[in-house]
Length: 341
Image (tube, rainbow, N blue to C red):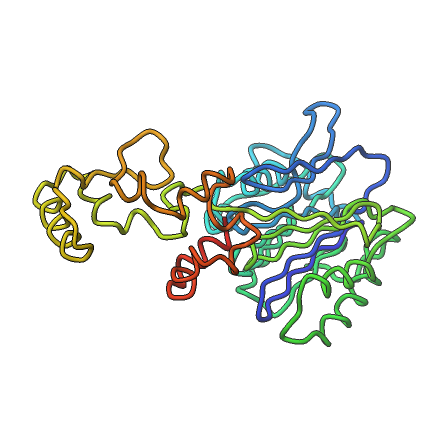
């Protein structure tokens, strides 16, 4: 008994209630994903729900009533393997969609698991083994509970979640363009269960790259994790070292470019700079040359190193600091990079 919700307004917000009974679960946080894992007696801990740093989300409600057409018959791809490959970024959304379009998908014997997949653009793929799939290109919203979207309410089952679906649909019809994380948690609270209890409620704010969750319907005890870029060529100040001529002259061993930069920087700074000084592999690259300014003089880099942080984005004084002010006020890309670090 689970509920999956995708809403595309000004933001793309994903919501997921995991409702399970007598199954051991845990939440594992890594740089690449926030995973809800289930402890399988045979396979051990399996990351079969959750969000990844690419912007994808995976939910996997059980379909009630179950459908024998989803039972394995031969060489079909198991929905659990399909979902895990997508969640762990072994396959892209489009690759997964293309595979589903051209291959048979099965579930486990006697139980029809469905796939509720979405990507950073808010596109949605619902996969129902033995029945087919439905693709929705950035819908205004989309909901999946525990009945097949191919069958609707034609086949009744106490756990099918038709009432939850209707409740969530009615709430989503009234949402505003500023629909946000708090609004999604309100939706999940309205759809939460006690008989087959909601053990995890998770929300993913795609634009903010942040995952929020609470356990056992403890709505006031949220935890969150923000995915951060690991590109070490983003300098301490947020500027991109890959756009720096000194960096490009170094990695390409371009003496002509070194001479050009040395002349330009000498004029700009009214100090003699020689081409031999134009060697830098990146502000935050520990083992490698730096220009004299980047290596010894830059007050921003000195400050970052003294505080033991990676960039100014990890400092509480980011927007009050005079050292970084000129950069973040006049360079939107640097400001964005620092917000993500």
